[in-house]
Length: 52
Image 1 (cartoon, rainbow, N blue to C red):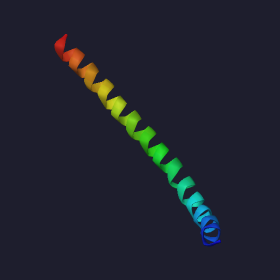
Image 2: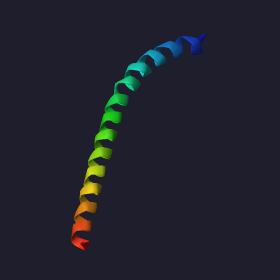
Image 3: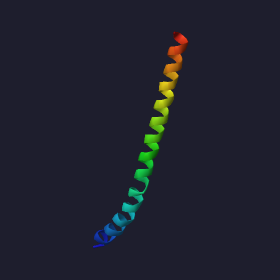
Image 4: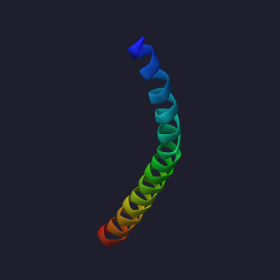
């Protein structure tokens, strides 16, 4: 009985916490990956220009 009564509140509390940070972390990871990728591409272009 104790476990059953403890499970619902934990789930209800965990759901909003999990759903709220997930989109934030996904957007941050996408932005960081895109920014890093852009920097890497720009550095590669600069290196190619220097080598040429």
